[in-house]
Length: 251
Image (cartoon, rainbow, N blue to C red):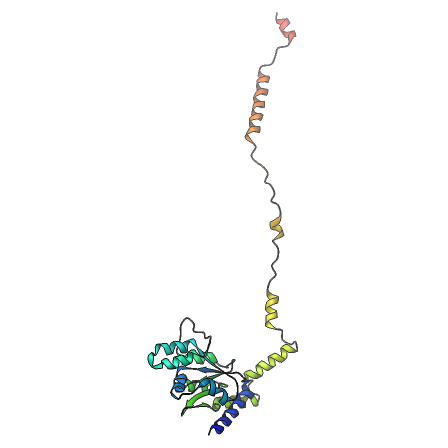
């Protein structure tokens, strides 16, 4: 039975590897329900997952999942301890946490660019995950880990890509990489560096010396001197000395 499960897992992994670019280390997002099922089945996730997937794995979770397990109380304390040992990936709900299922859906998005696996026992979450192509789904049944077969939506997407109707995310990334290597597409980081303005010197017009304004008002000292000269000239004109010839004539 174990060999059959591993054959199925190898087949499903090959499908996701060839069509969606899934690579090792396999990043597995765990929610609280999966951790609780592993605790009840006494499953050592760190040991059994790499053997089952025949490759290196990384157990991941989010802050929202941890917060949800804290609020659920003492019954899920063991599941919280398992989740705390996983790598905590940054989610966009830092200020306002959401439910674990909603957070995991936001992590995979519409195209699952980081190639996450989703490990859950939540049926509602599983149905929503299957609607997005290219997301490997895992669950625990009868105390054994199972990698689910590709969903019908995923199979239909791959067929559309093969027929030339769609382009997969993996193909988009490879095409972009080839264009960058051939120089057909410039690296966006170089564009940003080029767009940055160099720090120049000060404005040369601001360095010019300011012209001194013409002094319209004259100094009070010079005004006084001029007034005194005018008064002296006027007094000299009024009191003028009588010539000597006129004085003799009068005598």
